[in-house]
Amino acid sequence: MKSPDFDIAFSIGKFNIYWYAILLALGIAAAMMITDRRTKGRDVPKDIALDLCILGVPFGVLGARIFACLSGVVGWGDFLDLTRPGLSFFGGVLFAAAAILVYLKLRKASVDEMLDAAAPGTFAGVGIAVWGDFFNRTHYGPLVEKQSHKWFPLATFGDDLKIHYAAFFYEFLLCVILIVVYYVLLRKLIRKQGDRFLLMTLVYCLGRFGIDTIRQNMVMVGSMAFDQICEIVLAVVCLLALFLNRHTKAKTTDGEAETETPSDEEPEAAEEKPLEAVAAEKEPVPSESEEQDSFQGLN
Image 1: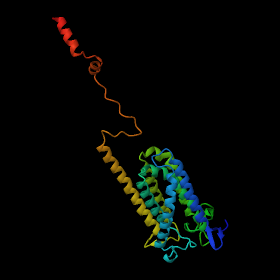
Image 2 (image 1 turned 90 degrees about the horizontal axis):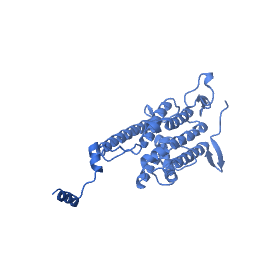
Image 3 (image 1 turned 90 degrees about the vertical axis):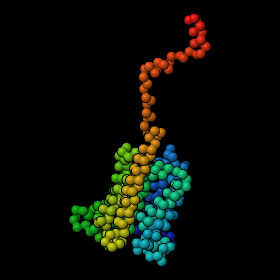
Image 4 (image 1 turned 120 degrees about the vertical axis):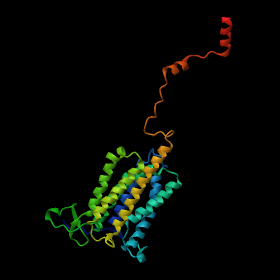
């Protein structure tokens, strides 16, 4: 295994274009295309995936840069210096998600429909973007001691040019597993669409928290990494959202039990009537004049 020294894809004058930025752009493009394809026939405005991408990217970059400065990866004096790399994943997620939710509310689009449509594409985009950490050597685990483990993609080079466990690849596998589970299990087992996305995000946060326990060179806040704090907060938010969704759904079902019919179930059959009632409905009822003629005939 040779040391990869290719974090810069190419340069335009003094401005360097990094592989991390290219893969991040590819991840965003993949997420948008997959989501756009999945919005067809759903209760969302046409071409909304493109609108959300145009809105989410600048807000995401802004949030990612702010969080990078908060965590100390980039100094506040270098905030606008685009030649200096440094973005926080969770900062980008937070700002982009906030902007997208506000936009969906203003457009009166179904948030649950949009979350479900975006679920596979979102984690496909994350899985692609995380390969940028392979090129800039910033997402790796401890040193590999066993010679039998020194193979790619189980191991990779760190920024110290020594062979470490490839933590970035484990995150990529986590994203692949989440996408497979969505198509194989979640679409069948989880009926509420918004819950699918929330559950996938919850599992992602827990999985990445475990991966980050072996990750090296992380920004620490006390005894815990900054990213791990973000993962815990996001996991708690997902749990609360899942609970509120279930609680709200239960209250709505109880309050509207007489009028609400599930969309994916057949309406209940009408109650059967007694045979006497059916016969009475079919038997013609004589008019008042007919009754008088019959009475006079008897007289």
